[in-house]
Length: 590
Image 1 (tube, rainbow, N blue to C red):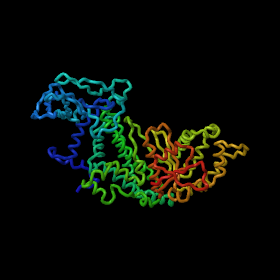
Image 2: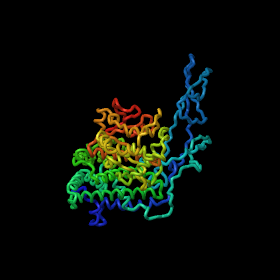
Image 3: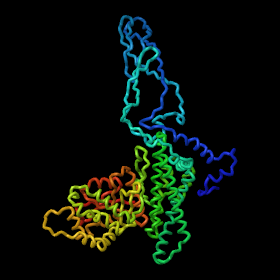
Image 4: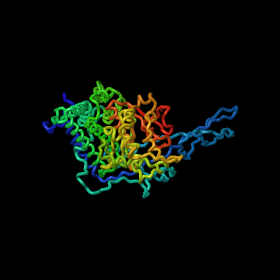
């Protein structure tokens, strides 16, 4: 019996060439498939296969019978009249008057029902695998490039008897405004071409309905092992804190970091596959495969981000009790039921992507994994990573750019007090809880952050002792007698008159949402999935520390931010009687 860790590639080397092996057959098919990615092919608007011309046969005249309905003593006679006029084709069931008959001098209108003539033209079998274009309604078609609506023209379709039928035929418009997705750099580069190993990895990521590919199982196994044995890192940090001069490292710790490095290498392989796919010359093929590769790359990168956070060891030794998960690939009976093929197809939905998502310790956060891929394929990748002290200036700058938006905030003198709002909103998190802070990068530039504190009550108590005295010295209180205070004066007064009871929600709500967080990204981010992935990393880190709920205080008049958090699954929670009426508290469990 072959183990999951064993590769199917090992058995190909010793087999003769005339013996069939599924892995060898797959490689042969991939070699024949690679040239398709290098074909120069555009993708614009709906792509429709050319349909064969269907000739419509003229309808056959139908003899109509007339009956004598006049009251007479003579014998009833039946006469038959044949109409030679052609019947008009109609798609309705209206009753039409076809002819009138006269029997024994009595005129009678005979109503005849139009007969629907059904014509079954011979079907033309087309091979969609070798056709130059494809039908838009074929299965697996998705993410079609946007294009303006085609113009319709009337085309006369002649019949054998000389009559004509007007038919609507859609023809693509040659307008210059049509959106055409073509590769920008037409120069041939072997570094950007998909390799045989890239396509083999893609086949393993999307293997069979009831079986994962060998490399897919490796992703599942590596991440589950790293998550299940993360307590080793916490134990090592605790041991080194007690023995500061200790330099020796246990073998199990070395194994954990080696497998974490291997997980990072596996993630980089998927990133290379994603990058090379977006540069393929066959844009039509790219549009078909891009949503699937983009989705699995996002999930695998998310798992790798979480592993990088685990490598710092900022969690208790009992992390396994919080991150085990309910139903995963490694739960008892789950894998066996999946691979048996006896279940209905709808029981195991999502394939490898769903199994990878279930490994993230966010059981009640499945809605955060629902996001739409970009409409036009792009090679842009956003990376989430733990916060470092070198990121402080970037986080402060993002806070300035995203918070000076309301009318009140514009009254703050940015030149005299550039750090006032960042010190109020993010400074305490970066100083008192840096282990639960994350940033997102775009090509090495920080464009967003998500910050949290594990226990809100303890966090505000530390803030009173360690953070507020420094802020009171930095921003002295203005004793002016103005009746209406400016926004900057309100923030400074908050530093000097901080009240813990006014910052916490109701005790019942706090027991279910003990953590507190804040979040912001620059408007340059056009990918809606970045926000959700950043929030998932933050919630998973809180879950690893034993927290199952988080809340965020927001200004009631900031409707845009309230709507944003609501879309992320946050709901309004009950507030304490002493809270500031200008603030609303939103929370969610995970």
